[in-house]
Amino acid sequence: MKIINPNYIYQDGNILENQAIAFEKNIEKIAPIEDLLKLFPNAQIINLPENSLIMPGLINAHVHLEFSANKETLEYGDFLQWLYSVIGNRDELINSCNIECMKKATQMMLESGITTYGAVSSYGMDLDAAASSPQNVVFFNELIGSQATMADALFADFTARLDASKSIKREGFYPAVAIHSPYSVHPILVKKALQMVKNEKLPLSAHFLESPAEKKWLEQSEGDFKKFFVDFLKQEKAVSNIKEFLAHFTDVPTLMTHVVQAGNEELEILSKSKHTIIHCPISNRLLGNGAIDLAELDKHNIHWICATDGLSSNYTLNLFEEMKIALFMHHEADLLTLAKRLLQSVTKDAAKALGLNTGEIKEGKNSDMLVLELTSKPNEQLPLHLLLHGYNISKIYINGKQVKGE
Image (cartoon, rainbow, N blue to C red):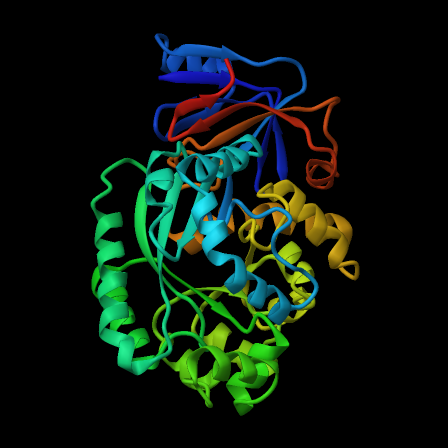
């Protein structure tokens, strides 16, 4: 048993003072240190310096490690321009990002306080890096392929990668499934994958309505995407429309990523099916896809969380930076309220969406904790200050084990 003794604890938007935390893998008790010493007289005591704050570890629910070599290779500003640059440089980027490159990306996340992440894996090349990282990992094996003639081969490759992830037996590693998108996965494959998800109760993610080009293609089989599909896949029509795609997920709560182009009708369906939206503001801006309307999500009672996406469409995997960008992107929202919502979205809400026992400094929850060094006593605007000021993270605990700091 350990007892850590901070000045302050950030819990559900509130600041607790004069409370210490007794923990092993889970948080056992939160109480004044005098009470904890009576309950656990043999515990190791961890005293922290003045103005220390403990908060939950951050959860980055959507990241692509396999493209972590990108810095100046891909083209930003327009989704199709970016997509063509991905295809043109895919082999170079994949081949230049070995396990050390991907481990560097996981370390970047750890240094910025991310104790859990959702790795969306297209090829399975990131499995070893994810399996050996100190963080909790939900490993989303991605299914992609819109050609019916290739369905059996594509599904065999997908199941082989999924089985490989199931073979990882370590604390905090969870195999999962990702459906790439409605335009890139044939309905035959979607149905087969979702049956596995239901049978095995696996976490599920999908990209959905990211760009205007995607929406026009799904609705009309026209627009900027048509040339892409004709040129690369000899495909004249979309394999699904929007409603057909969403119908597959009716009884399977899913993490739907981006959803920037959803209208009222799509939002009603998402709400009814209790899906969660993953909001990636930097990626949406860099790829020219616009900004999601958070007020509309709240109006439809849709849960949303914030994530970084991968370095193919971001310059960082730092969630504090991502939240700060979101704070300025959504200028119409009340500043402090949005700061609180963003922090909750990458802790408590993300844990709930992923089905994990973490994301809160609360008795019974996993001991995934950050120790931050504040510069003065915090006030009611602490959530805003946490996003703005980049406080030093001196210690990090994951499942009760210290992974950073002395």
